[in-house]
Length: 231
Image (cartoon, rainbow, N blue to C red; front, top):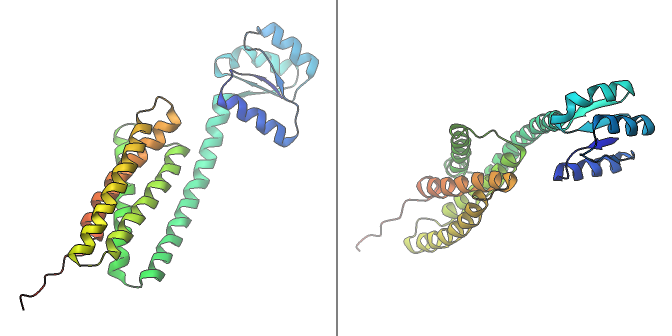
């Protein structure tokens, strides 16, 4: 596999994938001209020539002349992401069904199950809506962060639900969740402000999730406070 791409995390991933499948990795300097690449490709006779998008057109004839398949890094990455994203979405759908079944078996009360699952479900829709309005295209990192946000939402809702209707118990639970939520919010808000796209995707998704899950859990999952009689 002849590779002429910049030194990036993607290049490291390509090297790892090449090693896994047992192929030979032939790195080519990005400063090589088409004629120089032609020499190395003709000498090594690779089955695959992987290049940066900007050089794909210039090296198409080189790959064709030596019987190598030309692969544009961007197109290859996008096709893999699309395929894997579909698998992740199906996995998430299956996990959601199993999660609902587990909560049902644990609580065995339709209203309690609804109170626990509804904040998480609404927050997930809220995250997707906010990202859509902001013009953000969903990546695998957003989907992974959605799972994390959903887990936080389930935790918040279960804590609110198990606090019961006693004022003192609810106050202790609320205090604990406020501290946990603010700490989590601070961490992921810092990630959302990062210049690294992966960290920004995870941080922004979970930040919205923390706020939405806490507010909706407080409004939906928390029991009404019992009023004690005068006598």
